[in-house]
Image (tube, rainbow, N blue to C red; front, top):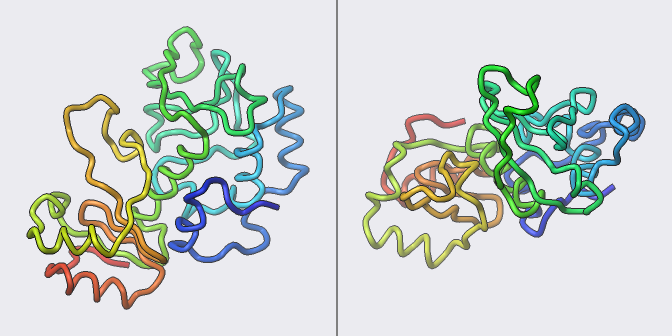
Length: 231
């Protein structure tokens, strides 16, 4: 079984507790869903279900991965992820299901949900399923899914002194993430702050996800602020 879903997932996994047997759905559950729908899941999504599908820290801190029994096909699209209040859905176009790492589309649910297929106006979300999973799992790490973390005011990064931003730029790398899953429309006139990363740590706009509790204190001290919420 493959634990990684993308080139970035080895780093993302350092933020969460390690994989354990039982963290994913078994093959029989996946096959039952595929037979019910008359499809085969794309390899990237299938492997993610098998390895991580039951891990709520990665898949259900806010928006959530649907249970295999809850997968549906509507408007020629496999819906597999849902916004936490059901306001929008993410899916894979049926014409792309044979691709290992297909594109992902998004639609607003509207008042009728997915029962009225003509109201599901799909728009591009991510060029690849793997990049969508990166965004979602990073987001969930920052929302409390990581082993440890801390949150400060959301405008913190824009007000950091230049020397502290320089420290981040020098000693951290930057993840490749998209703005939509972080609450920003792709074409919005707003700059999405970068996600800074290093082994066992990720920092985004005043929020830290960390493997080690000690790092939460150390980074807070280095950036000279106090976490308003930490875990």
